[in-house]
Length: 51
Length: 452
View 1 (cartoon, each protein chain N blue to C red):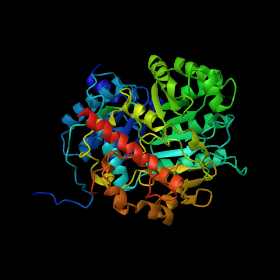
View 2: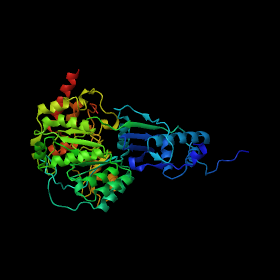
View 3: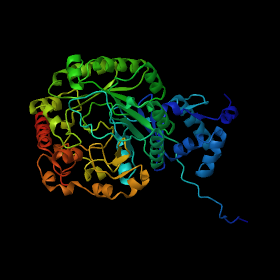
View 4: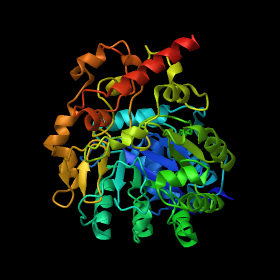
């Protein structure tokens, strides 16, 4: 006879093979956020018109 | 090595060279030695979390098999493979190496960071922090935006540590310490050590003039993500005239060489003004030979007290055009103006207050160093209280490009690199850019046309 699922049974998550994605941190000579020098401040360049 | 022996090993994180956070369920890891940003999928993130628990590889595989729909055999094979991979990249110790098989994006890709930035903004996570530790400075740079002002009590070491603890809990990863001259604080190595203990990617902005062998050794051992040093020209008469401190260039260059010897990642930052505009190419070559990054900035900003005096050092139109068109720099003007940012960055003015913020030496929180909108003080409230419910921050966050109809309908808008902070300090309105920013956009458009 099949055992009933108990309250303690936890749902197992969908499995994906463990994966690492990598990218070199930006080394480009950029003018982004020139006033603060804060890396990755997020100042956009050329936002789309009409937004 | 036999598999049974391998599975008994307890891998250890190599915290010395890594900065990391669990960000919306995925581990984000900055390899500080290689300058590589990494994200881990859900399974790899759980493995990374289990490594922290000091358990053998066998136990990690068991836990993965319990949590995910995968057989014990497959989980074991995959755990061993990814641990070997992490060992090869020096992320963990006490485990044999395997082949490096990260899914590596091309060198000029910023896809991973852009996704992270978008996510941080959507979820309101303070991913990037700029923390000025002092406004004191031995230099008197002609263009500096700081004013002497009243002497106030800077955050103590304990206060700074408490703030860093709060920032780590809030999910901040990139942390810049600046000033003033940060090396005027004797407790700087202790502050950086605490930040690194909390796994921040730490960047230091300094003139380098107070760095001696001992300090450089201490800092190098803490693996900052980057030390950015201000150099205005390789000619000391030009550089020292800007810093108004004789002998400052020699000291800065000594610091750069000593940092290089210790393999610390260096960036040479140079504000371009009338007096040093002709020397930036030499500086660029110097940085390149050194293996350092190079960044220039020709946008001079008014002083924090509103004085426009520093603007007299701003380069002229022709020089701006020359800089923007110089192929050594990012050729942003080549981008198709129709291809702007997507998602939330197509609506908000910038990441300030959404995914980044500024903290003053006195604990004041503002959206950015350039945006003097005080949202609260960390001596009175916690960071999460300020970040989560400051009315001033909420009002700032609510601003959209649609609140700037004049700009949005301007034919130069697609080329514009407006900065809300610069707008505010120079024109008194976040929504109104100074004329020189419009002029700059005009140059970008001209360059873009020439390219075609």
